[in-house]
Image 1: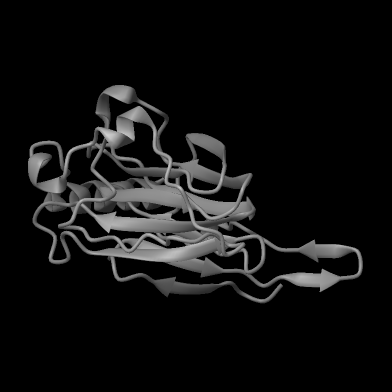
Image 2: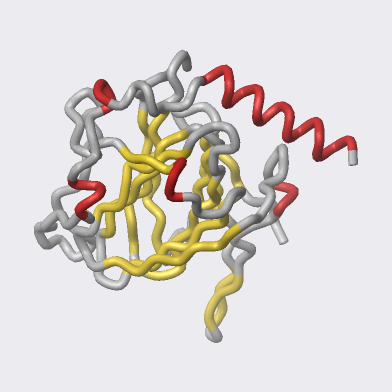
Length: 207
């Protein structure tokens, strides 16, 4: 199996993975996740799956740090624009975002470290997203910011994979999420994120 191609995104702590896909008349085979592609490895606490109609926008979500929630995101069916946002107060790239097309053609994946914001927009009906999480769901320490915040200026596509115009659909919670400027007291601190990640690496490799 040829090695996966790994590219760092414009947001430090976020990575894009492009797997080697083996195709033949029977179908295809790929490794969509390997623990040794990440340093430190992703501790798996929970695995989520969501299925979304075209136009569904989920996020921008983030969690309190510590412990935060690192994620490894993959789209086995359909297509989504996956977006990572640097919401770490004090980060040199605070407010920066980057995106990756995750779909059932190139079968890329995205990793985002603790403290980063995450969102995705479904570009096709029945788009399926699965993500591995370092921490389980904890409503009291999970938050969101407005995906249409003009300070972030995320360039959301207006058309889906079939070329048709998208009608954005958000949950009530995401629709009511504040802009970044009004959420500063909730945002993770860059120094705390770096300390948590370094401490995890030390614990992992002292075992």
